[in-house]
Length: 268
Image 1 (cartoon, one colour):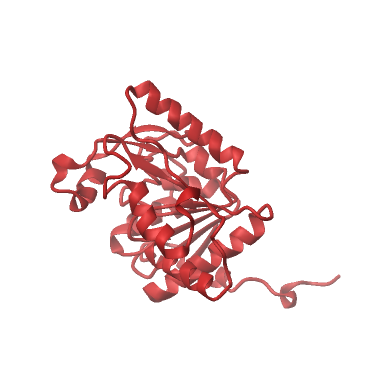
Image 2 (tube, one colour; image 1 turned 180 degrees about the vertical axis):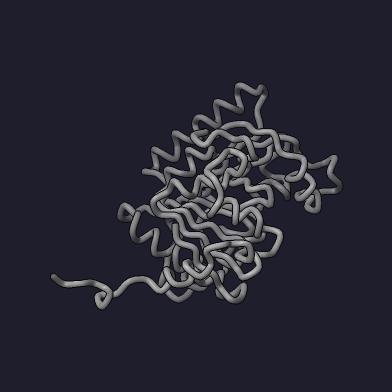
């Protein structure tokens, strides 16, 4: 795991975007890019930087497939607060990813079994696309990734999950009161997320500091779903100073961020 710390929101966004683009180049399979998409405030600057890269000719998302992390159950995908509509507005309309290439878990159906069958099909669709090359992530204050709340199995697949009370309270600002916030969702599982070629997690603000410390330096545990990043061979965590404020190994992360050069090698 690499931990990279920016001194400003703009620097955090640039670092994160550079690592997304490098990950697509490293883990790509030629013509088809497959990008995992997160909602929330944390990755918005990253998406703006990807738009700049596209405008400058350093990136092209016109044929990219996008796979969302999650979707609410119980509201139509045309609802303004559905994650499909959020991603259309915050990603497709920003970086030029076609709406036709946007895939989002289906949160509607006649029965629970039908919704779960759609969730199983979502995992299959990711595999059919060749797998997600770079998965963009945020982290909840309680350590959740996607909507994998504390207690989620570390090997879980895309499935129906109950939203934690704290998560619903945090999201109530987007709805007309907490009574309108859905109680359930469909989310990529932690096992699904771990199959991506690269993970790029962005976190900003002091409210994320405890979750980041637990995910990066704490025990691998279902109590902090974000700790599964420790299992991934190409995970990049991009933070601002506030989100990094409770990391015990900060000095090491800063040293490691400098990388390695030929001068560091000993030639025998």
